[in-house]
Image 1 (cartoon, rainbow, N blue to C red):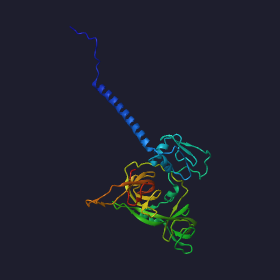
Image 2: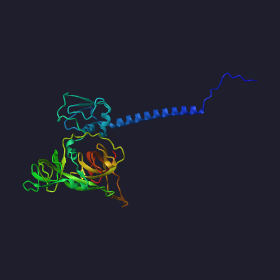
Image 3: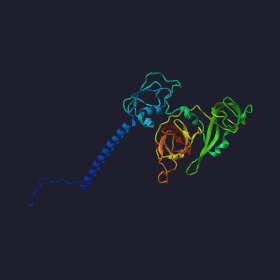
Image 4: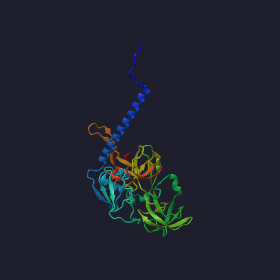
Amino acid sequence: MRRLSFFKRPQVRSSNVHQGTQSLTKRLIGLVFILTSLAAITTANAQALKDDAPDRYVVKKGDTLWGIANRFLRDPWRWPLIWQNNQEIANPHLIYPGDLLVVTGLNNIKVVRLKPKARRSDLDRGIPAIPPNVIGPFLTSPLIIEPGELDETGYVLQGVDDEILLGKYDQFYARNLGDLDAEGYRVFQIGETLIEPESGEVLGIEARHLGDARMLRGEEDISKLVVIESNEDIRPGNRIMPYDDSAPLPYFEPRAPENEVAGWILYAPKGVRDVGRFDVVIISGGAREGLEPGHVVRAMAHRKNRKDPVTGETFTPPDESSGLMMVFRVFDKLSYALVMEATRAISLGDRYQNP
């Protein structure tokens, strides 16, 4: 007898069930990832704003973006991440003295124009990221040179009246200048040969800035110049390079290096061993290692071996954070960095790493 069937079970292929399960699983994983990311961002944002951050701040002449951000954020070098996503601040560099910053939340820093006016004067420029007067001399001429480049640089002969020591407003003769129509000329003294401490590789030669000069009479062989600024005595044999001060100060976007970096603090142009806030240092590593202007690195106090008072054995204390530095000029194997924060003395021979 044929059995009658009033209900027929639909045939479902196992592959379709598997694909549907996979799709649902992917969606759930994606949702969990989004919720986790939002939670992490919220937590990071809550921790980034200082507990005692003021609700309002009036921008003053001489302020820097880093300094202003330091009033609000635990990590002031992260200010572009906040202000670039703020509709009220189309360009974070275009805030001016007299503007009012109103903080209603980490992602809501508003700019109020207290004194609206046309901004046409060069003296009324937007607030810079870092102090321009500190790094200016290191931006307009190459102060890291390769050994072979010395033969191509000009040099001081003597004062017009046979002076050996030259200072501001003294006139002198020079030779081998090359460019006779430059905006100005940087006078420097051959300084330290900078060597990588671990490998012994010669990274470059530091040129110590002595002063600036202007052309009075340019000649093919011997030219006549006058000293317009003097940091130290200028002597016969000191080297000269042309520079151009007309270029505007570049904007720096502070950020962590994209890859892992590490190196050494090798030299301070001021000729001191310990440096602090707003001092310039030369660090190992440059374009070859992936460093770029705007990269922020953390200085680490490097301790030498110590003797254990109980066992008498030697031990090496761990490196400790001593401050933050921002790279502002990069050469092939070396870079200039500005100390932005110093929690303790930063010394030559200390290391640096990602912030």
